[in-house]
Every structure is written in structure tokens, then in C-alpha cells.
Amino acid sequence: MLSKFLLKSNSTVIFSGAGMSTESGLQDFRSADRGLWNNLNPIELADIEAIDSNRSEFIKFYQWRIQEMSTHQPNDGHRILASWESKGLIKGVITQNVENYHEQAGTSRIAKLHGDLGTLRCMSCNKQYESHIYLKPQEMTSCSCGGFIRPNVVLFGEMLSKASLQLADNLLEGVDLLIVLGSSLQVSPANQFPKQAKSRGAKLVIVNNDPTPFDRYADLVINLSIGNTLSKTDEEFRDSSLNDTRSS
Image (cartoon, rainbow, N blue to C red; front, top):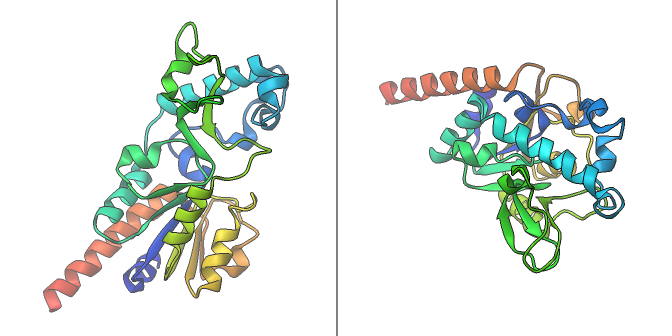
């Protein structure tokens, strides 16, 4: 069914959430084992205030997240999306995820709404670093200028970057089809993009294991795994394209 939407669309955009990363083996952010962090709430550790009020636990938390990201890798779903982009089937990806799996798989046009866990920056001079320096035996968290080096992610209490929002808006310009993959669509303002796409006349498809508050707006809801759904859709799309070629 999804393949039919894809075949009819001249402009398709992907909106991906945590479910895209959990299929690579990552733990969901909202259901992380809080016992690992001395019974502290991971959401509190991802707050801008934690940098000053609880810096050691903040660093420990992001060491764990960076280690988890580096331990796992892109899944078949990421690779299929990269293939679709290279073939012109999708314009790009808007993502709530901070892992760099879309980039690793080969997707080039990505609006990373919540930032990038693959890089770090100095809070004073804005010098950029690769995230693996957080994993060294003596983790590097102080820049040569004396500033604190933090992950390039959007923390609670911070605004989304204007650049990522602008890219997302550009991707949705003239969109025919928005495919939501693995998002609960509960986090604002990111969850407004499906409504925005619908208001522009686009079809909305939601692929998620659990129901979302936006299911009632969707033209198609699929409560199955992302990898299997995209693999099946890719096969159906290729079969349909082959049949069109034979009949022309």
C-alpha cells in the first residue's frame, strides 16, 4: 500500500523518530534504565541546567549515549532511505534523532531538529570536535580556550536551531507525501511538521509500532516495524517500476 503512495508522489519527505534508531539496537531515550544514573531522570540530565548543576553526571550520561551510538550502526531502513534519496524518490529526511545513522547510511539532505550527537562544541569559542573524545580514558571536556565542550544536541531548555528548521521547511515546500517513521509525535514543536505537510495538501503516512495522536490525520497508518515495511515497499516499488518499463 505504501508503495502506491510513493509511486504517485512527485515530492516525498521522511520524518524519522526514535523508533528508527531503536531498530539499530539503541535504547529508547524515554525508557532508558534510570538505575544506570543513580536513579536520576535521564530527561533531567539532558537539560541545559545540568551542565552547571550536575556536570559530572551530565558528562557520564552523554558518554553512555555516545558509546551506545558508536556500538551500533545504521539498519536496513536507514540504507533504503539513502538509496531512495540517491534515486530521487525522496527529497530528504527531517529527523528528531541525534544519532548520525542517516549520514552513515548515505543520506545527504537531513534536517536534524534536535542536533547531532556525532559532534561536540566549545560553549565559549564554538570550536567543533568529534564526539569520540568524550570516550577517552581521560575524557576531554575543556577546550584550549578554557570553555566547556558539550555535545552538539539540543538540550531541554534550548531552542531548536534556525538552520535545521529552515531546512525542514524547505524540504516540505511542495511536498506530496510525508512518511513518518518511528515517532510517537508527542514532542513539540517537531510534531507540528506532519500537520504542516497536511495543510499544504500532502498525504500523510505513519509507520510506528504504537498509535500516535496524529493517526487520525493520516491517510495510512502502519503499526509494523520500519525495516520490514521499507524493505517490502522497496521491493514493491522496484517491481512496479519494472512492470512500467516492460509495458512502455
